[in-house]
Amino acid sequence: MIRSFLMSVFLFVYVYSATGESFEVVVPEIPGIEVIPGGSVPIPGPETALAFRFDDSRIVVGKGKRSMWSTDSGHTWGPGPYSPGEKVAIDLGDGEILAIKRNSRRRSDGLFTLQVRRSQDNWKTVHEDEAVVDISNASYTLTGGGDLIDGFLFHHGILKLPDGRLIGTMYGNYEGDTELCDGYPPELGQRKYRTVVVFSTDRGRTWGNHVHVAYNQMLGRGLPDDHPLAEHLPDERVKPTAAVPAITQEGFREADIVQATNADLICVMRTGGRNGGTTTLFPTPLYCSRSIDMGKTWTLPYQIADRGVCPNLVTLANGIIVCTYSRPGNWLIFSDDDGNTWKGAFQFGMTRDYNYIVEVAPNVIQVYHETETAKGKLVRGTFFTVNKQ
Image (cartoon, rainbow, N blue to C red; front, side, top):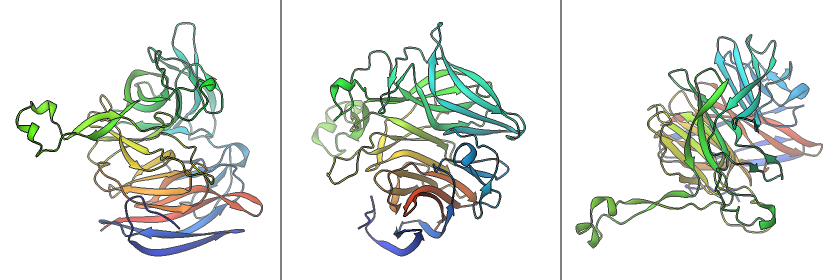
């Protein structure tokens, strides 16, 4: 049975089949939004659904020599050159493409180095480069796989702001962070992560001016407006919302970021991801935080879904923001009010692997996800048209 996070009224059913697999996609009735499934295309070859769209409309899925390319908005696919191959990649315009590796390495001066690849000719030729990150008070980061990283990690959130600066999301720990991930052996020593944003004014060569986004607090309900105490206490003591301890297993990580049509920045973050299997586990919600001042300050994070790893965001031509996420299952959720509220979550696949999303035509998305077949994993690109009603 497929569950919707917010809706229980379903509009129609669409079925696609892969080799050895079929899955029934049930799209809920979403107030103000119409979602129309449009078919699913197999993309043979890639081992991962990692996707990147160039400004010239080329799309590449996968890594290295197993990358597959499309020049017709995701309808047909063929081999091509190596892809950028990193979750953090951006087309800066004028033929300049930047791809940043995840891990940072501490330097002797207290700053951190990132390995990057840069192209000045639209990915015809690529050269290795380094970037420098300045995050004061950064500590080491221990990943779920047991890797010890010198500092914070990039994951996939990167955006070019209207003034030309770049903003990127990173996760890790400050010195003094001691709260351990819930449910993990204390001997592991894995601390709950915090998410920050960093900025670059030189096209990704140096990063700094980090700003805290989320760590151990979330938005909660405060005192009701009609409570008797509201008449006797100062307004700042009886706000309808309040900062409360965040419900997370791992803290806040794997953030993506987009700009809404009202210019606000929207950041969506993972907080867990061990859900799955036969045991019923507590939720590890997906959270959203927003900035109304180009990333200088951020709201307390608020829950938008009951699960989610590696959330991927896109702001469509009509202003609707779409988020895809997974584990367990592959999901979509929508906002038509610039990220203030989210609705219409539905499942379109049943794996636990990361999804990626691209707007391939105005208000048409293609979601890239891995499917299980009799011969192993197959990446598929599934189309949806998302209209305002």
